[in-house]
Length: 635
Image 1 (cartoon, helix red, strand yellow):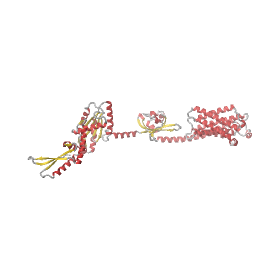
Image 2 (cartoon, rainbow, N blue to C red):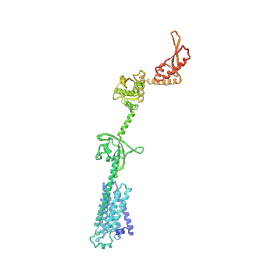
Image 3 (tube, helix red, strand yellow):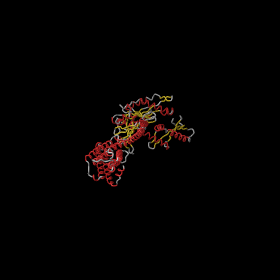
Image 4 (cartoon, helix red, strand yellow):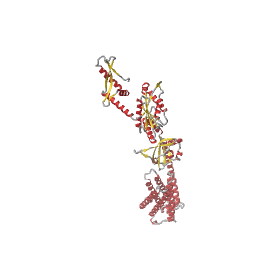
């Protein structure tokens, strides 16, 4: 060992040693670049690495030899050099093949380093032996063993660093370590030769291993391999245990999630957790033989398979699909995906499959509540407008007619007031059931609120069909309703509007049906009335008259006319107070127009009070024998 350290630390050989290390670094960098070039075929990378190492070995060895023994400069023993180059090429190729083995471990990396160290050492010792023939060289066995172990270790670490995922700059680190290997082995082989002065003590044992370079190399490399492989095996076991524990932890963590997880490359399933196995009814082995796209009714988009799409806010946007569960049952799911490196260092796509059956059911329930009446379960106004718009569009395309029936119950308020609101709710449900029994499957019944209903006839064969249905609906309410032990009777007034005759949009048709329904109530209730041109004018005039009447009562614009009453002798005995309405623009409005309107709108109460108070105030100033008469509404 002293001879080896003396040689390596010799001040006279510093320049030579630095030159060797620079050449080794240059050649090692080239070799590492060839080995890690992923775009090149594997066999070509192995061959390029072997050639690079062979050239590097010969260059560094002869540089070391000629700088150590200048008188040998230019001498190259070609037969031995060729053999050495061939052995180096073979061992370097074997080491590259071990490194590129798919199931790489610490043990295979150490074996790769030992194989390369063996080739480089064999080359050095073989050429040295051929140069000094017929003489022999004596070696320091401890130095040879140290050089072999060091070279194998450095080379193994170079391979390990190059294949490490955690390395910051794997190529640079591997190049430096490989350069140290290519420099240490030729320098160490040269420094392991014993000086001539020590040969006299060694020569007394002619069979000494110090004079057998091949035996020295084989024995030293064998010891180095055994030593390093044992260490590597221990490390492999520890790494395997750690990986097993980490794998179990990750597996438990993945199995504990509420989402199903699929790890894929393209459409190939690599791994899956227990949740996705429960959702699909397939075990892991079966899933790995299935195409991921075949698990869904509609396959995920290409963006999802490439790592997911992002929303405008930058977060991953989920996709909704139907997953095929056990028995081909469709399960609504939400898919999130992202790209990440897998355990083998290659990229993979992780798909999170979330079961949204309960959420879908909740959304459907909310949608149902938004579009349906909670009391009768019939569609409400919003649901009606959606369907009515669709019916109008279909009628327009097909060139056929449809009809709208507006229904308002007669006498419902009396039932509510006498039997209570609970009885009124029961009555509305039973009325809806009776109406539904008179309709076809294609007809549509909705409740707008209160005691108002709407019926849509999607198609009508003749213009008389809506009227005939209306008569059946009126007749179905003749039978009494049994509510809280009492019989209750209600009727219905119905207005009919036809599409597209009376309107070509939902709002207009509903308005026309409503106008016709009010006209039916004016005609005596329990009637059916078809919308006709001009009905809206009457309704608008009636509305305007109601507004004017309210204003007239507020402004005291009404007057009282006193009509005298005579006895049989022609003597005035009393006066009858009669309300009159001199409208500022319409002129004198007769009582038979505004009195019924006041009764329907409830304005008859303040009107009657005003007439009674005013007439009595005036009559108080008359003679005692003349009385006053005032007509009051029963309301």
